[in-house]
Length: 270
Image (cartoon, rainbow, N blue to C red):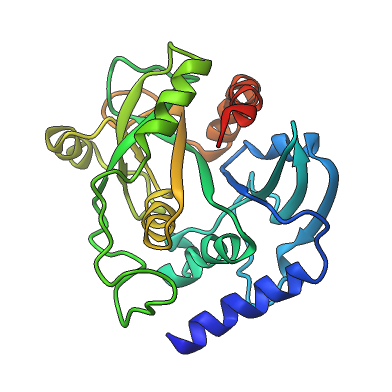
């Protein structure tokens, strides 16, 4: 763990020596949702490949760069593209950027993703506020020795997505539904039997990201808000085969509404 903390510090120190405005709000932009970074004022762009110890995003729809600057008066850091367990990274590598953002001074983390809808009240294109999660992968980034400098050995997870932030988001758009997100390791799309099981467990959404980052952010003391873009209905609910390119297309369409929500929300954040 000492080595893990030192790699976080090395990456954060590299950025601190170069950034103009230390960020207070971090955003992780999921599949097809990276356009918001284009609106950042005085942007400083850091390709992941240039950042010490940073993994490299390999998924279509993820640009693979960190953009730091200001947006509507708020100092922000946006990750255009994330890392997934199914890419072969360890979960500590997956959440490495979260700890780097914390080291830069980020207090609030907004996470977005493209996912499948299990709740039949949803339809593709809907934006859902995640209010809780179910870890169906049965692993997490905190397994192993704990570094008390990063966070507590046994972090509380009774409010993984901060209720006050959910209320703020609803003040921007009162029509946003809420739901429980099931993290599925992937990369294959889930089976119909798995979806039936996840729905019995209480899941509304299913996807291959977000939960590891949520766990790490809570571990290091960040407040988390998460938006899920329903790009397809889950296996056994939709009648067509899953296709990642169609997922990206739907995420691009929904991104316009999500960007407006985020822009209206940012000035309200503490």
